[in-house]
Length: 346
Image (cartoon, rainbow, N blue to C red; front, side):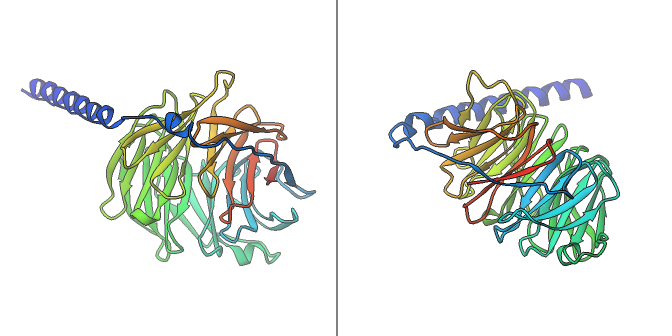
């Protein structure tokens, strides 16, 4: 009895999927590249103004970086077990914390700039006080959030009281930071959840996964409200478009893609036949006109978001570019690499 019911449910799901695909195709009356060709092309000339390393910098691969909202400080996490705070203006190291595990994969700054978070293969998200880290004294975790059954792939603050973490266990967790307790789980991906993007104006959050999907969740009831497909490889990172109506994704399939939440589908692909390296991360300029992609071939590729054309390539790193971010004021780009350095560009 169970088998016929299961087969009927599978057929119903496939039929619903076909209906959704048909509705998406019907709504796709044009393409972003076609519309974008009417927009004048732009030139971009950027240089690395600062290299953040110093004599006491990282001695392991840097896996993650994050800007403070003041657009002056940068946080980095490397597989030397160190969490470091830098002054992006002059390259000075402002503070450091030693982590219990060397295998760090993610870091984040709180909106107020008073807290930072990090995590990795120890499955734990550790919170640190920035004032303590920059005081010259040894910094210990304020809290350790332990709830995942797999490695911690990403952490993002909603505000100074709530934090989201994603994991190789295929889930995302919402945490109450004051009490250090779990508020809820988000389940639905079919593999490691690799990155998180907070859509504050929509009370929502986006996640991507090695299951090749992008999902959007309602934070209030922890329900998945949209699932986007298109990539043919693992999705490693995402970036929320400045107006929060679209999301960019970075994949092992050597492409970045743009998904429009209103159209409920992919609207652009950023790829080139001579690009055979995957992407680890991406970021948008403050206006959204530029998309910066961090590639495995040690480069940063700069794309015109509207025209879907590559307009610049940034060279300088000597190993994989692992993480990338644009300052809140839009004046600088920071890249982190396995070559143990960060570079600040403008």
